[in-house]
Length: 538
Image (cartoon, rainbow, N blue to C red; front, side, top):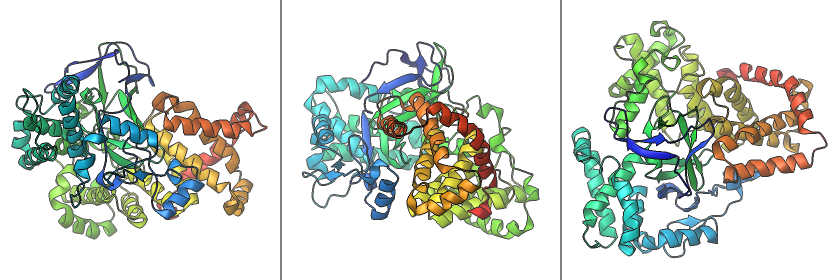
């Protein structure tokens, strides 16, 4: 673990918040608050075990179409090869170096367990617990420090934590107990001097699954697995966070979004904070079993993310019948999409449209057309502005679908709208991960559009005042300027950006200063493209 002496874990000032992470020095926006070389637990999801390196989480696309498209755009998953472990045939690695690191640290404790013929793939939390138990058995003295760090978190670290889970969600508690026992059983039911490994296993599993964060690649924004680290997971949630997490494959960091003074608590987000109040609170209650009382939630449903373009009663009549059908379909779930005290028929209709759109968003297998129809449903109702969720998240999903299907020009247009009109309204920091990822994807799309396949389109746009080659430099400069404040230097994402920048600028006869001056003239025309993107142009 890297040095993290500038933070400390102590009792949070949030009522019922347990411990929290506090700054011991002043941090400026973009500063590293916490950094770990690799989360203590980092596990690919079961459907990613053979296309994602189990150590560094680099991904190699296995779908031929996706792989060819990624390669043409210069994305690493278009060329990365993941080779399976010859022992278990269940996990893979991108290099011998990663395989060696994984074996020494953890894989040797699970290889024979997960490789049993006929045994189904084990969930990531179980695999994480198995590895920790294996290390604990092999070196009890050294590993007990890590185990204590894990078990000190909620729920196992709270005398009433597991009982509280049972009171609110009995099935979840039973799942934790079952999976914890399974991890202990698969390890051979080890006996560790002076310890109750079965209870430890349940505590480990419960804490990992209750505090795990998502691991996604900044290069393509694909969800690959879960991570857990006691220090990072000590940070509490706020819907108005002062810090954000960044996954650097395999490193993990917390970066300051706002100035944080010495002595202040560091807050990150556990859920999408740009959702309406009722959605945020419902998601946090379902996933983490608490009702958020942060400063943002205390303001009630009065912020821009809660507002529609007009009162629900103004929903056009052509949407009444479809919305009424959706009420029947999503009836039990409508409460999470209704503001407190909002129970009229008109409000339920709008909530039903919201429920339908979110159902599409939550479906990882939703097709391009399904995502497009969900956006059209919201925007077409004239209730949603482009910056009200779930439209922004659906737009990002549609952008990904366009790239996967080879619809690069459509991806470019939608990405421009996200860059200029949507993401800045949601995330004011230019170095915010979502804005950097979108700008990077835009640059790769533009690079493809500058190729011979799109020569006619390129010339047509140039005649209209849009020089794609010049615009490419604009987005390349954007990510090159802002990436260090979120993803640092020398990380996989930063290396791709730096290498691309150096390669492009080395071959250019025009200076960066000249490029930036020219971009000031073309940028208004690009903003006009963003304004002209409508649902009918999808």
